[in-house]
Image (cartoon, rainbow, N blue to C red; front, side, top):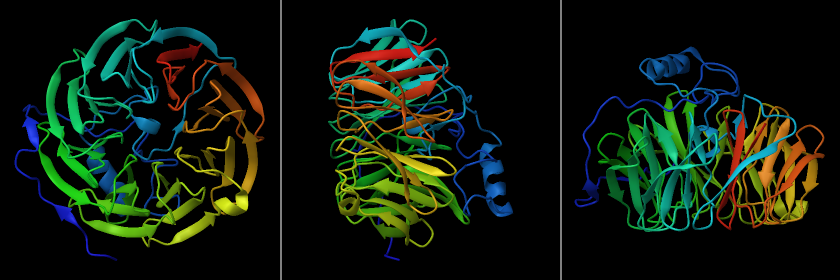
Length: 414
């Protein structure tokens, strides 16, 4: 294993501090002591790992299963929802926001939070789409907001990272990275993790915004970190422009494992059972053992004749679902990497899929939102929203929310 590279904070990086206490572990189905959680082993938790999780959750404020508080729904970036959606979705409302939407929305309680390319973070009522507040950022927001403990964490393309009061829309603190932030944040305990084009994964204190440590990669960190629990502790998993998939110890900022991704990655890695799942810009898709850094399997993009993969995968117990830029949604067998089916949309798929009750939901550049049967790969629902859809669906409280490049935010339900 390569020598770990972590750096101490530099003076002047913290703009403002807000002293508070009582921050909690984000656990909307993540780090749950059952089911498909990120594992120490393949799909089971040794007693030592379970003790870690119980300790971490002892004082945790658990998000309800109905919420979608962060990118991909949980810190594993699983893209899997345990609840249900109506079989026949209907448009409930449409909000026209200024600036295109590539940001995946967050749904917590009766609020929806989403960023726009017009330098704003917006909060709306889930029931009717009416605006509650808007927060002016320094630059465009393409990252998904992370909503934990009454705070919204979000970065923008200027490199500014904000903590915002979720109820009032007022700034609590801000931290300035040295380059743009396209990655969404993840909260673990009293730490918030976010990647930046300054080649760093930053670990900040949730209460004050002070930098605890910084891990320096070999190139830009484009995607969001995911969280895995290994036998000897929690790690943040990043994939980026340096063609590597790295597991970084959350406590120390030291590298634990380092695997080749064979090409640059703009997708964020999903984790399950101690493994990471991610595609690269060459069109390959990989399953990587986070303990050893070895490939479990690799689906070769040239052999599959697929385009670049910039969407993040949804990972269930049996399958992995990922979209490609040549219009394909592919289901892989999670254990073997064999292709179970391929569905072809009418536009490129950069929207990361979400699996809900046996269906796979995603958007495409043809201006449509699709639902495909997860077992058969057959289309079961489609809604034309107009404008390219790069944002991923957010599914919470029995609703599906998704934005378009033309700045329209749609809410579906019944």
